[in-house]
Every structure is written in C-alpha cells, then in structure tokens.
Amino acid sequence: MLHHRYRLTFPESQVLEPVIYHVVKDYNIIPSIRRASIENHFGWMIVDFQGSHEDINAAIAYLEGLGVEVVNAEGDFVAG
Image 1: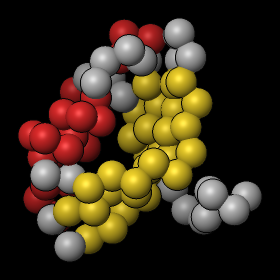
Image 2 (image 1 turned 45 degrees about the vertical axis):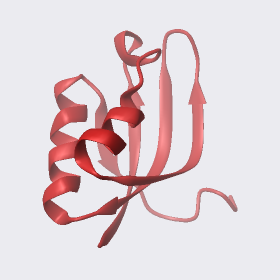
Image 3 (image 1 turned 30 degrees about the vertical axis):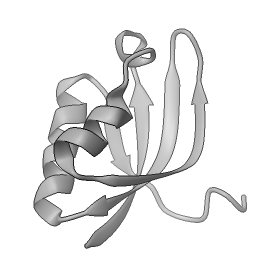
Image 4 (image 1 turned 135 degrees about the vertical axis):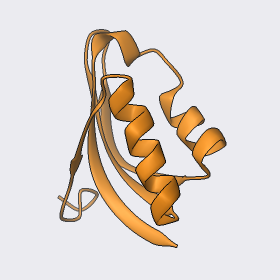
C-alpha cells in the first residue's frame, strides 16, 4: 500500500457533496484528513491517501473530473 499526501481544493459546486465518501467506497482509499477548512463557497483539505497505485490514480481522476484541484502536499500539517 502506498501513502500520498495531497491538498484538495473544492469548488463551490462540490463543497456540500460527499466527495471523500465516494473516494473511500468507490476507490478503496483509506483517507487521513490532516487539516481542512470547508465553507459555503470554498473548501480545502490536506489528506493522506493510502491505497494501491491504481486506486489512488483512479480516485484522483475522479476528483479532478468533479473540478477538485489535486496537488501533492509536503510536510506535517498537523504539527504546523
């Protein structure tokens, strides 16, 4: 199993949708949310994804298809 950390930026159209639920259920990803801020019109999240290379790539493609910006994140976002 691979571990990758990403910063997800959610457009207004996806802020209230169960996006992470679908990542877990449909793509077999184990998420660990490190930090997040979700408001009515905008949201972002730092999340560790654990899963196979294929599942993580499929989950990222799903997120990007929804308009969620996905970029690699580095560092310990819990401590600082």
